[in-house]
Length: 505
Image (cartoon, rainbow, N blue to C red):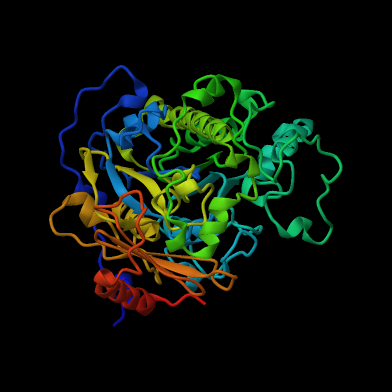
């Protein structure tokens, strides 16, 4: 019997088995309500809150003094906060496909932002539907095609574009070019044959590459995608929460993904001159790094301006402002749970599809297996449970198995994930999630794979030198130990374990 068969046949525990912490008195702040014991009338609701490109460390609850994330910080104070959570592929569509299906990228067709996965791969929505849940998806999921993948209720970029009407011109100008990662087009194939219909109709700015450093958005705050997602999520909760049917809702924001164009109110919170460059900025030992990494450090093609430290600080400021705006809208959804009396019956999870290097090692955007790019925030709030910090390395491929088990739902096989429910119940009492794996650009020019096992991280490049980092002694990943003979046995053991899992091609 292989692991998939074992997982498929394993009996699942209900949320009630995890409950048992006495309810606490309510505070005045509706978003700051403590998690209380769920009612036994029906299965728990599940709310999955997502952002895009949220660097794990950029949150007050993770120790960042610059970030303004009061709503996430409040949620973290009620949740299990994972400090070593990782995506399985550091780019939008493949990461989300893996998270939604519980399958690693090499078991899916989605290897980039333009190839969809087949409908035969079931998602979390199918599992919850099968158990009688009302399923909703509001916001970005980057399915790459028109499949609904099991969701009964779905609003995405194209619905926001209809809401904007003529004001869509402002968003097209902010993007400056075709960018399916930011929703225009949402489905890449729609424009592939006919070409970009906005070509020649955008008001161009003075950017040197395809992505602007950042700026204040010309859209009114109420017209931002994040405001749209918040409003429509609240509408969903008001319309369906009283039906007696439990719900599984994903509310998924675009920010802080580029374009880093926040509304004025949030841009005013951060000033470029006050932003500090990362400690590792300009300190990478390029003689010991793979050539693609070196090229990205020496020249950031999407935003060449970032070779100037002042432009780098400006981009960092607009990133934090975008993050603050996302947090504000997230708080509106969590606040609605309280207003509707749903907080004690709803499991809440927050995560992101990948991170953002934000200048670490002199790198920007994602695509890497360094902590800034591959690491993600992960908060799981269970009614009736207290908060805790967890440093066990875990993977988003396990999110489907985890949320379904917490809700008492049978997981439909196959599934590559390992449910984290035992870890959530018995914090640090011997539960082992196993090594964390990730992969990138399978079938492309520079395929690579990563394993995080204990304090070690090893990256295998099919066409370049490997990387080995001791995250305990070198959390900034400045010292590649893969070429050091003293660490040869460690590198060889991790390489063998990684290639036994999957060899990138």
